[in-house]
Image 1 (cartoon, rainbow, N blue to C red):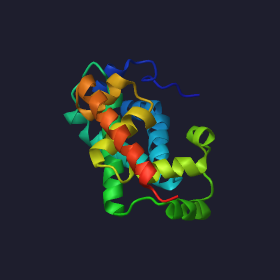
Image 2: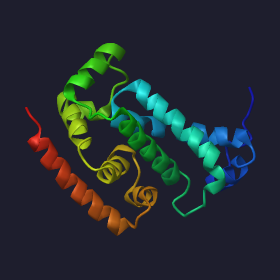
Image 3: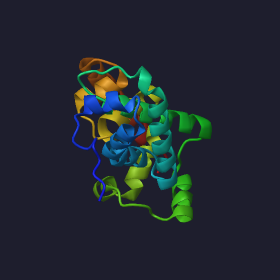
Length: 189
């Protein structure tokens, strides 16, 4: 059994090593893969798209690692900002909002996919309604809500990933939540 020499390194050291050592980056990948995939899946509800977003996120992070500047919040918020940007790019390329009909068609084509805890709480229809309504929001509001509630980041980490102060992030999340409520209420039953 091969032991990974990077496994026990702290994150900052690992990021520095990863700039020159792909094996160190592989350790970062192993540490963050599940969280990045879960974030993308919660936002898209389609396993294949979540896989593509996850892959694109790590490819972009690997190519851009030299531009990463260490901050107290760590590597995670930077990675989730990339994921958020990849999601926005995906929806921009797709140039369509996710409708209930599209979600049902995706499920029929690809199967139910892995269980999502949000489905147990909200129910599948309610979760689909919220996702469809979220697609009607501005990209900034989508990014703020996704980073704060779907990624598993703390308020400080979400603010860092968004590139704002915690106070600014709180205001943006408040406004985005209000806009989301209006979009859900306005959606046809």
